Image 1 (cartoon, rainbow, N blue to C red):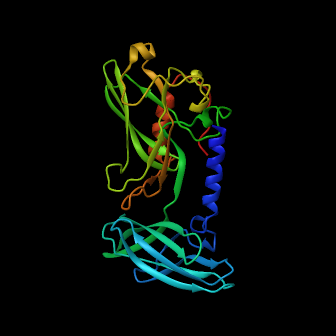
Image 2: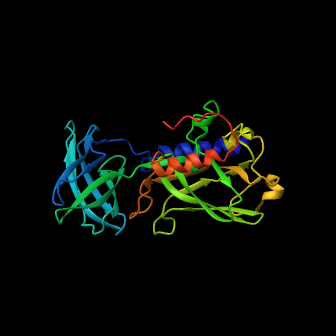
Image 3: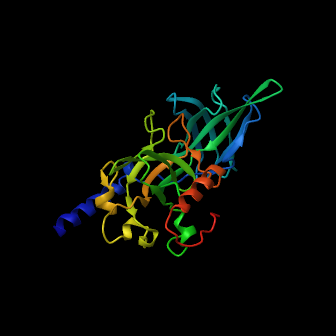
Length: 324
């Protein structure tokens, strides 16, 4: 076995040293100068990023802008960057007119040098329509389509860190639930404590509880949010909470999504329980070429009122500090 592994490593090293399969070197430097901006008008261009030749030879650079909704190239830019040249500014334009207020469209920028590794940038353009004095104005904004790898998701409620700061410094929320309410209760799923990415449904039918969830935009074309793991558990009392990281818990949760739970058998008949969800996902701010996750404004009045109501029917624990 050891001999086999040694031969495999030698073979891999030999392949890596072949000219045709050598790792592509980094010959260009790309620096974003505008992450978010508003175009002065539909026919105006704005500074977006610079490309600099950092190699020891002249380079030809081909930049293609790809419309991810229409699946076609909408612009191609060609530059020759001489050795030692300063950075080349690359401009962004409104690539196609949008028609609805709030409509978005995503684009990728492929930056391919004649020698070396290719780089990619991802953006979205969004239309905002305003009216003043009967006149309608179209505003186009461009945003970075930020990738959030392996970020956590929890359901709306108070933060553990606000109730017991020593428990965690993460922005995990827990959801107090009144199970005397028959039918469906719906709670927001927030990722990274930044975006609303879905909803969780708690369905109560007499003694039976079933928890399920839906990711926003998951039924749309080219949806690319990836669910990496799921975790759900319940507590009869906040005093039962001692660990909030699923990986650190000594035993796996006895609860799962889409599985029936008995109020009598699982909760001992207790109808005031705490639900804790901590899923993990990789997602973009714009999860499809035509969709956007909205911001999770946890301190908006509606959410503050809902959170206060949740805390009111919980067992008394301690003074809760407001979210920072």
